[in-house]
Image (cartoon, rainbow, N blue to C red; front, side):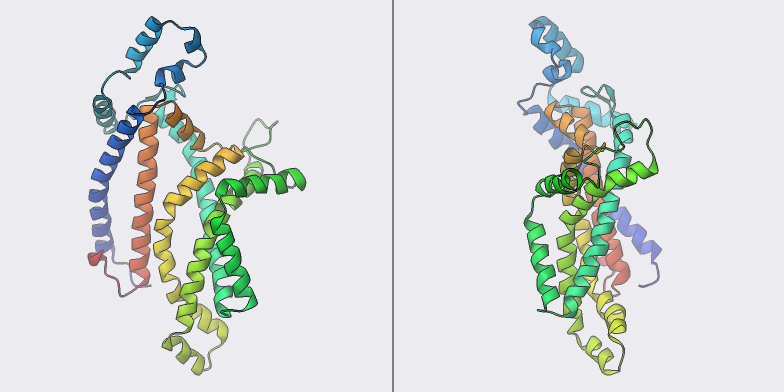
Length: 330
């Protein structure tokens, strides 16, 4: 890894921030436009069962109070100008400020994604290296076949299978939630046991990509002349593998980190729904079905910002570990 070129890294981050601003602007505008065309009625979603017995005058007055009769461009502009001052609005369906909704749920979604992503990267690297050592061997064929099978498996199907096996049949792990049912406070032990299944399922959904990328990268590196020369000098296989092949073979994985963020977020929403994990999944579903403009826009901006940050992180890591890459060219 080269010395940290802070000025070049700062300039790259600055350029990406300038690029992110119009992207986020377009994304929020698109959210309001799509939500305005939605067949769901936000007034009925807000009123709930009370809307069934309400007269039209009451519904019209509620519609006016919520401002849903205004053109979506007007609603978008009001939300945008308020968001720039730190006010993300009020969630009509959850009856809370949007900042409070996100603040209460974001930490649990971030914990789930961080644990799952770390496990996927470490396990994928290990399996990929083991498979690349003997191309075409039994272990290579087994790891590759398993990776392709997991790659094709829908994450919600894997989640339901995990609940059936580990929670219902073996009864070794809780089926969902953040803590035990009778618990009145959140403890580290309970969170640790409850996160195993959702984080494991989410990690399995990302595992095949890292395994296959590492296997291909390390396999190609083992066939290069520098690695052959290291073997000819009598270096041990472990030194050749870890000191030469793995270092160059992991470079393509760095670009994979950023590209997997969108699917990681999508998978997390499904996993949270299956395991009743108190993240932002439930809030996202309710915001979408109830056409909750402020909450829906804030959650979409948050997801978009996470994707852009993941791409920036991947580029920074690639530029640090590959001396052939210049930050000024990115």
